[in-house]
Image 1: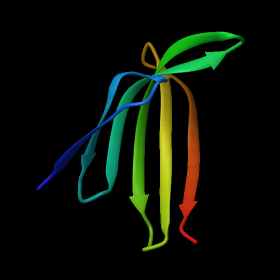
Image 2 (image 1 turned 45 degrees about the horizontal axis):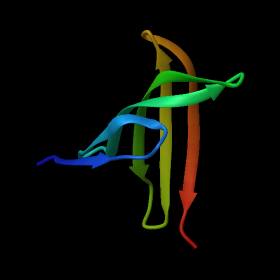
Image 3 (image 1 turned 180 degrees about the horizontal axis):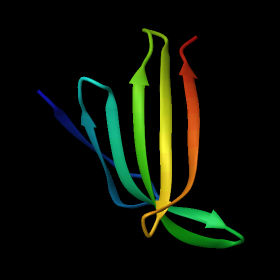
Image 4 (image 1 turned 45 degrees about the vertical axis):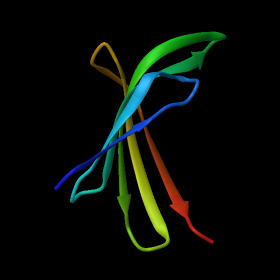
Length: 79
């Protein structure tokens, strides 16, 4: 069964919606990204996948008006 989460921060419009699935934690949210001194509203689609008890990989796709602006890959390691 899937579990739902809600997250907030100053740069997220309204709130982020997360769903825990058998794949991992999936987040969708609208984010105010600062570009050239202006805040631009973009869409984030995050996939956080636990690789081991100590490592989580995050792949985020950033879009605007349905066009891909970029991708972000982050690894989190517990010490």
